[in-house]
Image 1 (cartoon, rainbow, N blue to C red):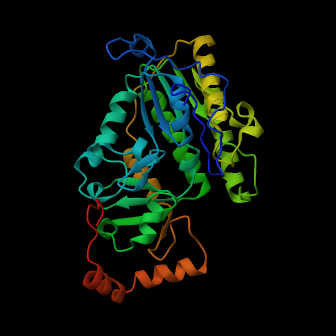
Image 2: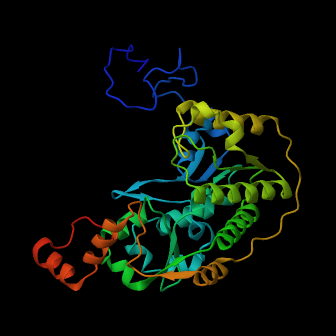
Image 3: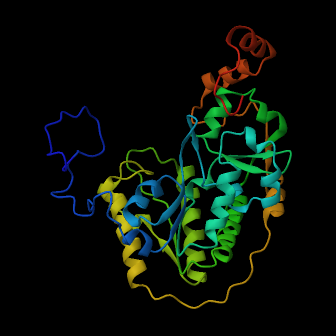
Length: 346
């Protein structure tokens, strides 16, 4: 906007930020196409995995980075803040036929993440959203998290999707979720062989507009406590307390922040990278945990397909789901609507 002369624009609200927030954009350097930006290769190799807060933070951190953060694929929100993505059994993921039909992260994502995990210089993790949602376990042993605002909404809208025929859905208890979180962090710790510094983002637990339920507040508090304890016990891990780093005035809601809020997180991390002394540590080899994850998922509560997995709840949503699951509904769809085109999960 500054580059094109800041023309007058009428913005239709509401919006979270005005177009011009800073007097001058001084963190972007314009170069010619033939110029080589040495900073892109000299900068530490960052690997980011987790929730949508990292999407904005990543752009402020380093050009030399790989991101496994939430984004839309084929019209569906794909989530990487997923214990199955971190702890999944490599052989089972590679061989899985069921995973190919699920609108989620895929085999290529899984393989590239675990390869980069072993070679990155800095690891940045955000897994607070992984504490929510059900889990889908395929018949061939792959676990995918069902987030309400991603795969959950898709399942509610498509209860007859083919991939559901070869899968079972489970709800984990809070202690089980905390256990999976700790196992995931342990795995990341021992697998990030080259990472000298590792950052674990906490969750905001301050309510802004009354949207943060007591249940979510409690589970996010458990998440923060587990993450802070993990960082305290493991060398070169730093807990990034969102409650302390992001000012209350920069909260849009309990999960999203203004651009200044994300910039505050990025600046905090960059300052820690510059100023924190790295501690030499003895590393133990990564232990296989995929099988344990499947066992843990199976120890949870099995839920039926009548369960609502998406963000829409209430009596009307339940009625619609029951109707969609009736045999007559399936016949009607095949006869008058037909299969959707360009769908990864028919």
